Image 1 (cartoon, helix red, strand yellow):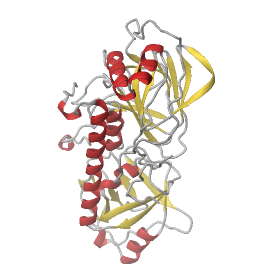
Image 2 (image 1 turned 90 degrees about the vertical axis):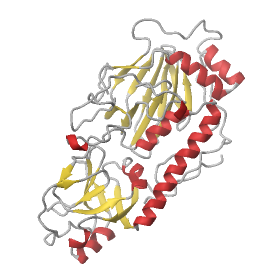
Image 3 (image 1 turned 60 degrees about the horizontal axis):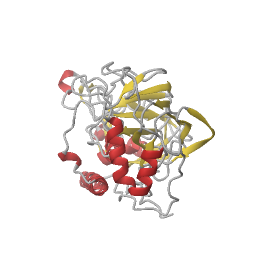
Image 4 (image 1 turned 135 degrees about the vertical axis):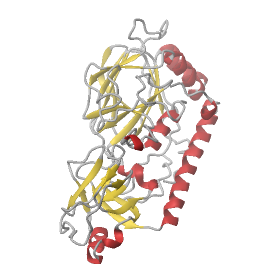
Length: 411
C-alpha cells in the first residue's frame, strides 16, 4: 500500500431536532468490500416524515453538531466555537462534495451509534475511530463490517453504524452529502456548549435532519466518484462501496506525544528565565479536566508546576484560540474554540495556528511539549496549511466535476 504523505508538523485533540499534506493518491488498497442487500432493490427512497433524519441510537462520550462556528462575535462575549478542528471539518465536507462550511457531526472519544433510514454518501475524517457497520437493510449482520476512514462511503438505507473508541487521535468529523439541516442560531448550526447556544450534546433517540434531497444527492455523487460498474452496484443493488483513493490523516506523528510549536506570548518576558526554561523543557500531561474550552496541563514525571511569583497582576484582556495562559498555580492552560473572550492570567505563549489541528486530537492522558519558533516560521507553516486545503479541494473538484465554492451554500 502506498502510504499517505504525512503532515509536515512533527508531533511528539447539535441540535436535538435534530501540515503540509498532499492528497493521498490512489492507493493499492483492496477495492471496497461489497455487501448486498438484495440482487435488485426497487428503490432506496425512504418513506415517512423521518425519511431524511438520522436517529442517534447511542450518544457516545460527546457527540455534537458543528460547523465553522460564529466568528466576529467576540464583542458579544461569544467565542467562535464550532469544530475543534475547522480544517478537518472542511475536509470531511469536501470528501462528499459539500460546500466546506456545511455542518457536520463532531465525535469525541468513543463515538455514537447512528441509524439511517435512507441512502447516504458520507465520510468520517480525523481520528482513527473504528467505524463498524452493524446492520444492513434493518437486519443485523452476523459479523460486523469495518468500514474505511478518510474517504467517501456509500451507505445503503437501513444501516446501523457504530464509531468505536479511536486507536489514535481523539476527534472525528462526519459529513453527509447535502449537509445537516439542524436549526441556525446566530448564523451557525454549531453547539457552543460553554455558552449554551445552538443546541446541546446529542443523546439517544435524538433525530438529526438531513438535506431533504439527501438520497438523490448521495446517489448522484456516488455514481460520479465510484464510476460505472461499482457505482451502479452500490446505488442500484444497495451495497456498501467506496473508492480506492483517500486523503491522508492529520493525526500527528508521535501521537500521543504532541510537539507543539509556539511563539512567545505577550507576557513571556515577565516570566523568570529559569521558569521559561522549565516551561519549554518539561513534558506536560493533558488533564482530565480539559474540554472544548481549553486543555489543562499538569506536571508529569520529574516535571513541576512553575513559579509564577515574577508575573504581574493583570486586568482582563482579549484572548483567543491557542493562547497559553499561566494561572497562579503554575500549570499552563491552552485555550480551545469555546474559550472565554477575555482573561486576566498572563499570556506566556501562543500556539502557531498551523498546530490547531494537533490540539483537537489531544485527549486526557496525552502529552505535550512546547518548542519555540519565530513568527516568520509560524507564517510559513500557516501558508503550507492553506496550500494543503487548496490542493485537496482541487483534487476532489476533479473527482466530483464541480467547484465547491461556486455552489450555493444553503444555510
